[in-house]
Length: 249
Image (cartoon, rainbow, N blue to C red):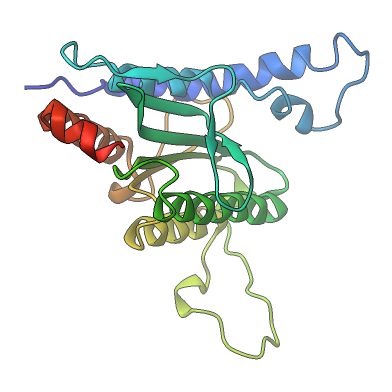
């Protein structure tokens, strides 16, 4: 029986996100003498997701019999279809072949509207680029596993209902009526997984500075994403070497 990641470890990863933001805000601009304004100073450093990345890296490395190579720092570029390459947050390699790739994103207030559009467009674009790269054989015949983690601050701006634009030539999908930005994220990522754009996603929400988190959907939970990763590990482990080699040519 494989031991699941304890709840306290996930809490520590979420708290590490907020601590990382605070550290980035303190350090940002220290060398140049120029600091970004508002919350942007806390996110331009790009290291605030390190604690959560470390937890997922430990899951990928959890089988001592399967020597997976996990990369979470430096340049993790993969070939893309609509552009030369995409730098992922986490890569998993086995015998020189790509097993999985994961992206880690977050959103804090107060600009939930603009940032929601940016984050969903990024996730859509990444999925389209990656799936086309798969179809064109840029990763070999073995389809990589793609995962995504989204952490959103729980605040008035992300929890309140959001109005749908009026006077559109066609009505919006009724599922979005009265939905907050967090609910929109839930709908978005549930649909992305259902349509096969990502193999598994976690959507985590937490108040600023808090280790306590809420998962808006069981299908987008830490536990579900962890289980999907362990299933991928078991699949790779079960492949005979000669079959794996043929699949990754």
